[in-house]
Each structure stands twice: as structure tokens, then as C-alpha cells.
Amino acid sequence: MNKFIDKLEKIQRTFGSIMLVGLLIVVSLQVISRFIIKSPIQWTEEGSRFIFFWVALMGACVSVKTKKHFTIAVYEPGNFRNPLVRLVAELIPDVIVLGFCVLLTWYGWEYFTSGFTRRGIEVPLQMSWVYAALPVSGVTMALYTINSILITIRNSRKSGEQ
Image 1 (cartoon, helix red, strand yellow):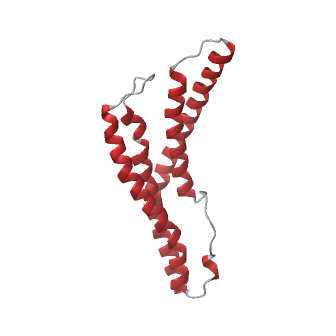
Image 2: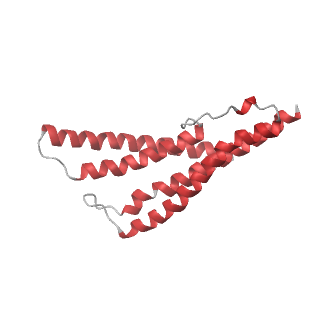
Image 3: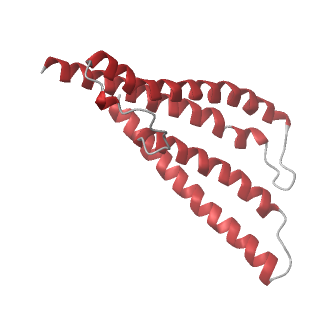
């Protein structure tokens, strides 16, 4: 499963990087056309929002995978002496993130399907292409979190055997 997860992360990093370059190009085009040429290109504002949506969610996925997302340290799992309590303390944040991923996937899917009947105002794009970022990121964050849970359990068993 780790090879699959690593390949998925590489795909998301690559896709996110390409989208970030695209965002930079579209925003630069918008600034140049608006402030230098004095004739703004209408689709650049909406297009940049659509691209930013994907960039942000792909970045969030990679952050979940690498455990670089924001956390609030309420307790330190390493301070617990009982191995079972320590394991539960280590798993609580991942379980909360997994719950968020399920909600993001569920409601993201509903939003995605509603996008089939909507189009962008300036960008003639079916909104489902934009909204697809929600269930895609929800599923991939869930996969990353499940993988993290499995690694935590496996490491707990290994340390318990020693």
C-alpha cells in the first residue's frame, strides 16, 4: 500500500505544481491586462479562482500525507506510559481527520454532481470539473490517513514486542 500511496502523492504534487504554475500565469495575465494594457481579460478572475481551488486542495492532501498540516497540541502522546493509552492518544488526531475526510467526500460528491447543471460565467466550463476537487481530495486524504493509522498501529505492535 505504501508504494501506491507514494505514487499518489507524487501525482498530486506534480498536478498541484502544474496548477500553481497555471495560476501564476493566469494571475500575471490578469495584472498585466488590467494595470498595464488597461483592458482586463474577463475570464482570468474566474479562471484563477477555479485553479486556486484545485491548488489549495491538492496542497491540503499532500499536507495530510506528510503530516505537515496544522495541529493543536492538547497533549503529547509520548507522555503516556501505558502503551494502549499512548496508541489511542496517537490515533485520536488521525480519526478526527478521517471523519473530516468522510464528510468532505460525502458533501463534496453532492456538490460535484450538482455541478453538472452549472457553468462558469466567464469560463465556459462545467462546474463539476471545479467541484471534483472536493471528493478527489476527500478520498485521497482518507487514504493517506488510513495509511497513517495502519503505520501507527504497526509501529505500536513492533515497539510492544521489544
